[in-house]
Image (cartoon, rainbow, N blue to C red; front, top):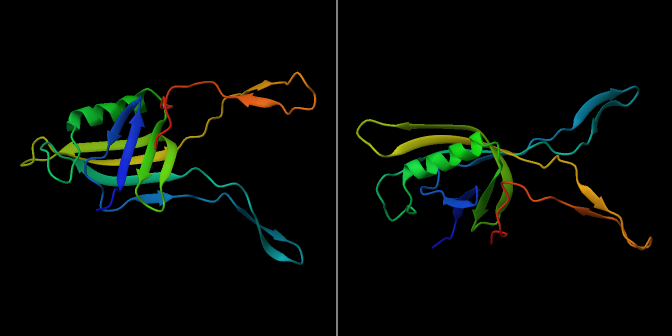
Length: 165
Protein backbone atom coordinates (compact mmCIF):
# COMPACT_ATOMS: atom_id res chain seq x y z
CA UNK A 1 0.00 0.00 0.00
CA UNK A 2 1.25 3.46 -0.87
CA UNK A 3 2.24 5.89 1.90
CA UNK A 4 1.09 8.91 -0.12
CA UNK A 5 0.11 11.70 2.25
CA UNK A 6 -0.73 15.38 2.10
CA UNK A 7 -0.10 17.41 5.23
CA UNK A 8 -0.42 21.04 6.27
CA UNK A 9 1.55 22.35 9.25
CA UNK A 10 -0.11 25.48 10.61
CA UNK A 11 0.80 27.13 13.89
CA UNK A 12 2.79 24.06 14.93
CA UNK A 13 -0.22 21.78 14.36
CA UNK A 14 0.09 18.98 11.83
CA UNK A 15 -3.05 18.53 9.74
CA UNK A 16 -3.20 15.40 7.60
CA UNK A 17 -5.60 15.87 4.71
CA UNK A 18 -8.18 13.19 5.57
CA UNK A 19 -9.45 12.49 2.04
CA UNK A 20 -6.92 12.79 -0.75
CA UNK A 21 -8.24 14.80 -3.71
CA UNK A 22 -9.01 13.22 -7.07
CA UNK A 23 -6.62 15.73 -8.67
CA UNK A 24 -3.96 18.14 -7.44
CA UNK A 25 -3.11 21.11 -9.63
CA UNK A 26 0.42 22.52 -9.28
CA UNK A 27 1.38 25.54 -11.31
CA UNK A 28 4.95 26.79 -11.56
CA UNK A 29 4.99 29.80 -13.88
CA UNK A 30 8.05 31.13 -15.59
CA UNK A 31 8.74 34.85 -15.58
CA UNK A 32 10.71 34.76 -18.81
CA UNK A 33 10.49 37.72 -21.15
CA UNK A 34 10.17 37.70 -24.92
CA UNK A 35 11.51 40.61 -26.91
CA UNK A 36 12.44 41.39 -30.48
CA UNK A 37 16.04 42.12 -31.44
CA UNK A 38 16.75 43.88 -34.73
CA UNK A 39 18.01 41.57 -37.46
CA UNK A 40 17.69 38.58 -35.12
CA UNK A 41 13.96 38.42 -34.44
CA UNK A 42 12.23 37.26 -31.30
CA UNK A 43 14.44 36.07 -28.41
CA UNK A 44 13.67 34.69 -24.97
CA UNK A 45 15.31 36.26 -21.90
CA UNK A 46 15.37 33.68 -19.10
CA UNK A 47 14.31 34.91 -15.65
CA UNK A 48 13.75 33.28 -12.27
CA UNK A 49 10.54 31.30 -11.84
CA UNK A 50 7.40 32.78 -10.34
CA UNK A 51 5.57 31.63 -7.23
CA UNK A 52 4.11 28.12 -7.34
CA UNK A 53 0.42 27.61 -6.74
CA UNK A 54 -1.24 24.45 -5.51
CA UNK A 55 -4.98 23.89 -5.53
CA UNK A 56 -7.41 21.05 -5.00
CA UNK A 57 -11.00 20.20 -4.08
CA UNK A 58 -12.01 17.51 -1.60
CA UNK A 59 -14.08 17.07 1.54
CA UNK A 60 -13.65 16.66 5.28
CA UNK A 61 -15.85 13.74 6.40
CA UNK A 62 -17.72 13.84 9.70
CA UNK A 63 -17.44 10.09 10.23
CA UNK A 64 -14.26 8.09 10.29
CA UNK A 65 -13.69 5.67 7.42
CA UNK A 66 -10.76 3.46 6.30
CA UNK A 67 -9.65 6.16 3.82
CA UNK A 68 -9.52 9.01 6.37
CA UNK A 69 -7.36 10.26 9.20
CA UNK A 70 -8.94 11.12 12.54
CA UNK A 71 -9.79 14.79 13.18
CA UNK A 72 -13.02 16.73 13.25
CA UNK A 73 -13.82 18.78 10.13
CA UNK A 74 -14.42 21.95 12.13
CA UNK A 75 -10.98 21.73 13.78
CA UNK A 76 -9.33 21.47 10.36
CA UNK A 77 -11.35 24.38 8.96
CA UNK A 78 -10.51 26.54 11.99
CA UNK A 79 -6.78 25.76 11.72
CA UNK A 80 -6.68 26.70 8.01
CA UNK A 81 -8.67 29.89 8.62
CA UNK A 82 -6.44 30.79 11.55
CA UNK A 83 -3.32 30.51 9.37
CA UNK A 84 -4.93 32.64 6.66
CA UNK A 85 -6.32 35.27 9.04
CA UNK A 86 -3.10 35.37 11.08
CA UNK A 87 -1.10 36.10 7.91
CA UNK A 88 1.35 33.34 8.74
CA UNK A 89 2.65 30.89 6.17
CA UNK A 90 1.94 27.23 6.59
CA UNK A 91 4.03 24.32 5.42
CA UNK A 92 2.61 22.05 2.72
CA UNK A 93 4.00 18.52 2.48
CA UNK A 94 3.44 15.71 0.03
CA UNK A 95 5.19 12.45 0.87
CA UNK A 96 5.21 8.96 -0.57
CA UNK A 97 5.79 9.95 -4.20
CA UNK A 98 8.70 10.72 -6.51
CA UNK A 99 7.58 14.37 -6.45
CA UNK A 100 7.67 14.95 -2.70
CA UNK A 101 7.14 18.58 -1.69
CA UNK A 102 8.00 20.56 1.43
CA UNK A 103 7.10 24.19 0.75
CA UNK A 104 6.00 27.20 2.78
CA UNK A 105 2.70 28.44 1.43
CA UNK A 106 0.15 31.16 2.07
CA UNK A 107 -3.58 30.48 1.91
CA UNK A 108 -4.87 32.46 -1.08
CA UNK A 109 -8.43 31.18 -0.97
CA UNK A 110 -10.36 28.67 1.10
CA UNK A 111 -14.03 27.96 0.45
CA UNK A 112 -16.16 25.31 2.09
CA UNK A 113 -19.79 24.24 2.27
CA UNK A 114 -22.00 21.80 4.12
CA UNK A 115 -24.52 20.05 1.88
CA UNK A 116 -28.04 18.88 2.60
CA UNK A 117 -28.22 15.16 3.25
CA UNK A 118 -24.52 15.05 4.27
CA UNK A 119 -24.62 17.02 7.50
CA UNK A 120 -21.23 17.22 9.15
CA UNK A 121 -19.29 16.61 5.93
CA UNK A 122 -17.64 19.77 4.59
CA UNK A 123 -16.73 20.06 0.92
CA UNK A 124 -13.94 22.53 0.27
CA UNK A 125 -11.72 24.15 -2.31
CA UNK A 126 -8.30 25.52 -1.39
CA UNK A 127 -5.62 27.47 -3.26
CA UNK A 128 -2.14 27.99 -1.84
CA UNK A 129 0.63 30.28 -3.08
CA UNK A 130 4.32 29.68 -2.43
CA UNK A 131 5.68 31.98 0.28
CA UNK A 132 9.21 33.34 0.18
CA UNK A 133 10.84 35.14 3.07
CA UNK A 134 11.58 38.71 2.05
CA UNK A 135 12.70 40.11 5.42
CA UNK A 136 16.18 41.48 5.98
CA UNK A 137 18.80 39.01 7.13
CA UNK A 138 21.45 39.73 9.75
CA UNK A 139 25.01 39.31 8.49
CA UNK A 140 27.69 38.29 10.98
CA UNK A 141 31.17 39.38 10.02
CA UNK A 142 33.90 36.90 11.01
CA UNK A 143 36.74 37.82 13.34
CA UNK A 144 39.22 36.48 10.79
CA UNK A 145 39.14 38.18 7.40
CA UNK A 146 39.85 34.84 5.70
CA UNK A 147 36.46 33.41 6.79
CA UNK A 148 33.31 34.20 4.79
CA UNK A 149 30.45 36.22 6.30
CA UNK A 150 27.45 34.21 7.52
CA UNK A 151 23.76 35.08 7.32
CA UNK A 152 21.51 34.41 10.30
CA UNK A 153 17.81 33.96 9.77
CA UNK A 154 15.56 34.99 12.65
CA UNK A 155 12.96 32.50 13.86
CA UNK A 156 9.45 33.31 12.66
CA UNK A 157 5.91 32.16 13.05
CA UNK A 158 4.93 29.54 10.51
CA UNK A 159 8.09 27.50 10.85
CA UNK A 160 7.74 24.07 12.48
CA UNK A 161 9.83 23.44 15.57
CA UNK A 162 11.55 20.49 13.89
CA UNK A 163 12.14 19.59 10.28
CA UNK A 164 9.42 17.30 8.88
CA UNK A 165 10.49 13.88 7.74
